[in-house]
Image: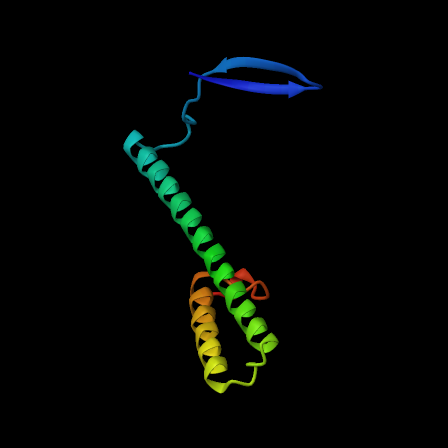
Length: 111
């Protein structure tokens, strides 16, 4: 048994409820459990993906900061340093592009 809660104008109302499968749905408890388990696994994967993307954003910020510091220290024209930063940024962009859909690309356009 579960409890439904509703709060209106600071006053809380509770009522016990029993949640049942729609009688028009023809499925087995095992199939429902498999669907629930899959949804949980997908949620966990999405959470991990979001953590990874935040980490990639932080790495990009670090690369930008290194470029800014190099320029500030007068090393902005250093070809080797710039090449290393550009290579790292390219790798980062490739990884991010694999994991996330660019914001300017409609959902239906992705393969």
